[in-house]
Image (cartoon, rainbow, N blue to C red):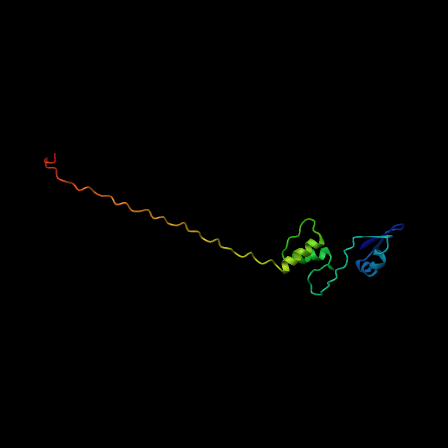
Length: 126
């Protein structure tokens, strides 16, 4: 049951169905306050995909059915943004391979060691 309040009257408990049928005469009148109203979900595309006609409660339920975590305070537009990400996930970033920079190989010249020939010392060298 929902409770509607007249500014100068007593509260009246009504069903959600009654409230939905008589919403126009109540919400356009500044003399009424409605407590506990869940609102009406209108599927604009009649496709079962949340849009601006859906209530936050119904969008949240749709997201949770698909495994999304909805926590804390979320605006209706934030919830619809989450729906959009589910329906059209962003393309993965292309993998850019960094070019391999090979350091040039510096070849050092090979120094051949010369081996001094051993000469026989005969004693006449002096």
